[in-house]
Image 1 (cartoon, rainbow, N blue to C red):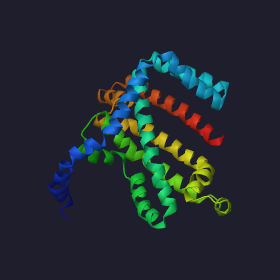
Image 2: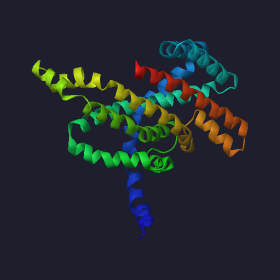
Image 3: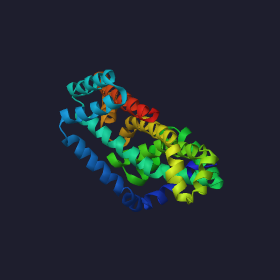
Length: 269
């Protein structure tokens, strides 16, 4: 069966014709990404260190704060600070849009068994398909560059926040909802005053997983022109520059550890 020929002949042409529409749809992502990238690279290094160290101290105490400060100074000393700030802009943009898209979809899935049944196989495919495959439709619809790279990160990282929002709301005990109804709360008040607060830890766990998946996808997104530490690793590997690849990889690992520990403590408090 000549499936590849059919896709090349019909699907590819249709996708290319939709490019102007998808370019317009990507405008909000591009705006947020550009704003965060400019902001993070504009703020002086000591202020960024103090802000992240403050968050580390409030969540994990003094020992982890020292580790955070040393890690950030190391990133600056090996001259990948600008790339790190670009990576953070990409990750924060991806996580923000995953929250905007994922939490409402998770709420809808918790409300409708039919919608959850339709959504489940889509999420299964999103979580099992090889990450490189995401790059093909993204390039065809959005081209290459920083914004298409972030879009591929969003698609790759979206599933956990949807699943865990759905799970968290479904796990809220019926007696709490009945108590809300007895007090005269409508379904929206029950959702925002009872279900969402009680499901918050589970939702935050989904956001934490989304954050980690975004960092892992940041390197692969460099294949279609995304910048940051992923591009440092990709270019270095292409040149067999093991030193630069190691520096970029260590930078990603340190950022992942810092933000994983901070978000984990937020979940557990």
